[in-house]
Image 1 (cartoon, rainbow, N blue to C red):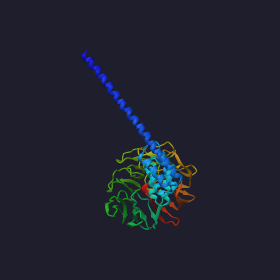
Image 2 (cartoon, rainbow, N blue to C red):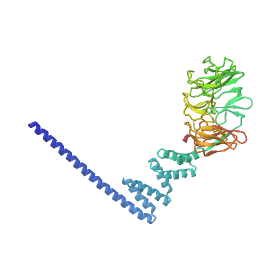
Image 3 (cartoon, one colour):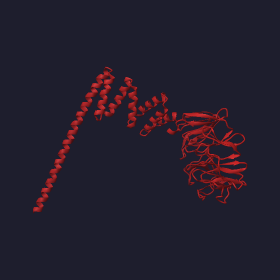
Length: 445
């Protein structure tokens, strides 16, 4: 009986404790409501006084009230009051404070798209493109807007150009060590057009990860960026067409073979043609059909493609995608050989890393995404696939560049224009002189 009495007393004690806690919570809530009401009253009083100042155009005093109302009180009116303060700054001509407040609102991810555009335009008009792009980038974090993206691209594709007075140049890899031909011999220049290696070679490949293959006095050698010999061809190859991080393509007796970087034969297998790719996949041809091989020279696919399409750098793949052809037309594949989409095109250019240049049966060119969706309608005489956010297009016989919105951002006034590799591209101007275009704000893309 004593045990039962203790249980009852304990239950009553817990109930009393619960009642006390509820009472405390109620008191705290009441205090918070009273405090909140007091805060709103005090904040409203400040704003009412500020409105009287505004009627007399006493902007400084009105602003002071607004700042106190926002800094000292956190009520549901704060967002509304911020907008009002922004309008007061503008009306009063306090533009420094106006733009500074927009910047703060962007940092807090509350600025509207209209506010972002205002700040962007201010930076553009003052020539401060870096800050203009920064404003857009920070805003795109929380605002999904094609208009903001369009504004960004309007200045991101500002460029400078440099003349390079050489007869022939080959599209380089990402290191921008450019193979050049002076009409007699091959050499290399840097992306600024300055001489890297003198034009003394009978033949030359692109550089890949610091190495290239050249022909000097009838002998092929692998060289480094200083021109020093690293390996010599002892197989007396007729031609060397390319080099990658793991192989060299050599030609002997009209057949293509794969060699190591030291010119040692990797396999006795010969092919009608071979293309190397930076992703390690080999594209090999036999009997008019193409197959893919992996890094160990094992077949990924059968010989099933009727064509593989080279990009501007002489490769089929960029990353994990490529453009190939079968009996039905051109389409896009992954590095495992599987089709990305069943969509086929009458013609297509090599994949560069963005939208892909495709043509209709009438020979007009447009652009499709990797899933086969037409993004820019067929309308151009010729085109190259997108890279660095730009696609080279031939419009009425002249070449220029469009962005993803099909807006010409580099005027079509070149004899030739090639895809960008990173921030630079090779073009030929109206005089037939090679130039290197460099995007000034590429890092912000």
